[in-house]
Image (tube, rainbow, N blue to C red; front, side, top):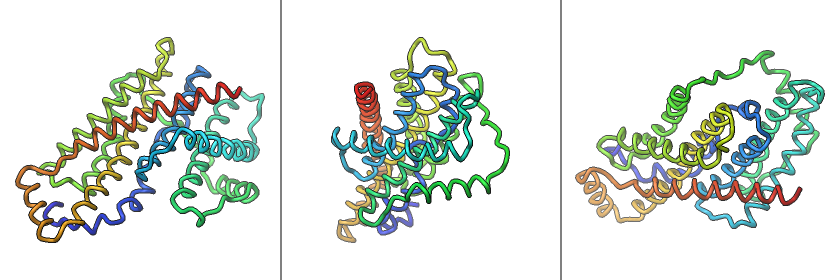
Amino acid sequence: MSDLFDPAALYSLSASLDDDSTIVEVDQDELKRVAGAEARRRCASLKLAARIVGLATANSAELSDDDVLESMVQILSRVAALREIALKLVEADRDSEDYSATFNAVTSAMLDVATEEWKWSRLAPGATRTLPPATVSKLLERTIQFSPERFDFEFVPHDMATLRRLAVLEAMPKVYGLANLFDYFQPSPDDMVRKFLQAIIKLAELHAELMADPASPEFTYKAILVRFYGISTGVLCEVFKAEAAADVARLRALPEIDRSLQVAQYERLGGMSYNHIIDKHQQAMDRLLDTANLILETRQRSR
């Protein structure tokens, strides 16, 4: 990639990754396997916090605490309205033993809808509109009609080693996609991918330990750990997107001759440094946990 480097090719980096790098890309049925109500609430809050902080990272903007809380209230209000519509469409029976699992699955799906609406309202202010409930209801109803009649639950391994291997394997295509996008002139992009994966694993394990209750059963910890692998991967993708765009912009700003000399020097010295991406990844993950705790505290005070 370095031999054919064209700075202009990454001019629209922010837009090119918006639809491909999702902050949380995990099993939508995970919450139903979490027995404790407190753990379920924490996992749900984590997903919301990840979307808000991730979008802020992708757009290189720091959200204040007030902005975070305002966004949370807007999203949760929209989720509540959409969830009522969806529960009626799936004909969820409150007396059924499947109701809790159905409620969690519907909540997760509607959270995706609400966060997508919020994301595009910020990316294109004044050029978007929120669909009215009646339109959303018809859209969901038609989607259900065209969907397969039967779904098999995703396999969840019993042993932790297999679970971790699968989580890393799921992260690898996304991280390799980053290296294909911009390899920072590394002679071996595989080394860069390996270091990114190590950063993902380190922070996923660390934050899962911080979030999980030591008294929780093993399957609860598994659900939290898998979610954090997805969060850590998504946050790194968003940080890479923002930092690579800035690094490329600095190269583009150089005169053509100076840029050629700079690129040649990077290739001669073994590549351009990308350690700042790993540092920013850690900072974003720390902020994510703080945001999740802030959301939890606010929800508890409002009860």
